[in-house]
Length: 193
Length: 196
Image (cartoon, rainbow over all chains, first blue to last red; front, side, top):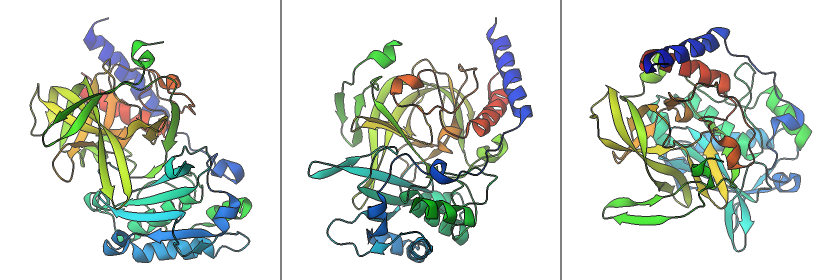
């Protein structure tokens, strides 16, 4: 088959897939809403928290405080934050992280005397929350969008996975204006903790 | 098993003054896969993605890849710095034959193949349409939308989500995350416009 015809065939196949539409998934609940790994329930009940100066300096301080209060305040879920101490479990940063994302978490596990990267299906001992300020500027994120990203990333640090775009959840990826976890997110956290 | 997966992890460090160190490496097949989730703009159409990509090229990986880091305090974002040769320019102030350093959202370290949102690294078999923007410091190029900004014209099978444990399970897959439907729709539009 010539290159031109190969390209045409590929184009037709892809076009068929596009025409078929995108199948939406049902809301995730219970264990399906969480990574296979994460912090333990004991750890989540009392998470020492460190906030780098960059978070406040770049305007995310209020969003981070709101996120902690939102999750800490969920009834029937043992989620709590404490002062940083010498080895904080949750560490938040904001700045330019180069790649094309608004926010991300980076989980770690203890490896000897230091921390090493942990997979999402392993036990975690420390989590970094990183807010990519330059990206959010580039894509024109509003205040509410940035607030949502902050609450979203704190949700990931508690082990919550993404929800489908058709669900009502702060754990959807994308430009949304949720500023609090929704009832779906809350019920999942109540189930877990 | 394809040769590029069977090559054990080996690093040959080449240092260039004023440039991040370049290592040539391929990922070992037995690396454990870890794909983290991020928050990012999900493009519902090619037209939407193109608005954020001042550069659109067709390119091939030239075999050289290094590690790039961005640091804020103690936090570090790592990426692969992958060198590609431009074969066609669709948009932007770049030239055919030029080599670009592209930051890919995946790298190896601590025994893991660490990816963001199901991204698989470019390989030398691929023929890629890349949607790029210069990074903040003008030192390299960022894939717009991460997995959304890279499309291999040599892969005709639709992407599917793969809950891979080992890197060997990702052979031949350009994307393995949970947005396969959205990726395939986007790719269909990319191929229709740029695949000729």
